[in-house]
Image 1 (cartoon, rainbow, N blue to C red):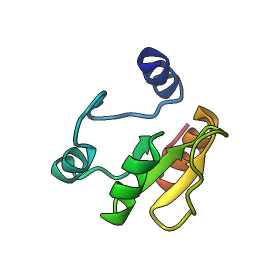
Image 2 (image 1 turned 30 degrees about the vertical axis):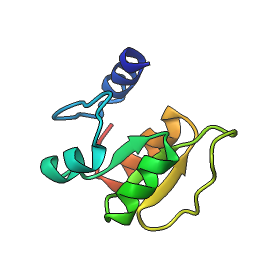
Image 3 (image 1 turned 60 degrees about the vertical axis):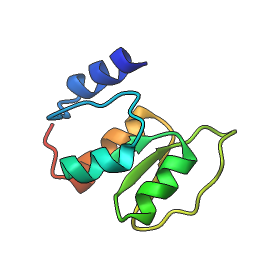
Image 4 (image 1 turned 180 degrees about the vertical axis):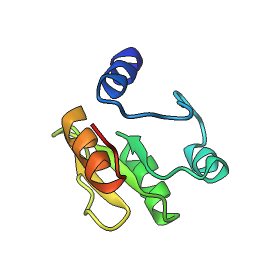
Length: 94
């Protein structure tokens, strides 16, 4: 999945300074790196980040916990949703 994610982001010209995979404390990383937006599929992590005012794209499959969207949580269901959200909200060019 990691390779697919990187490939899709690169194919769609979404640039990243760094990638983090399998991090124990994502809140600490987000704070230390001044992350603009985090993408994750674990509702517990999503809630923790949003409670700390970090914007999160909740990559939610239908069988995962439903969280109410708010200024810090946006539910997405596929990489196209993620791309469109970033493109529309973070001045990404084609």
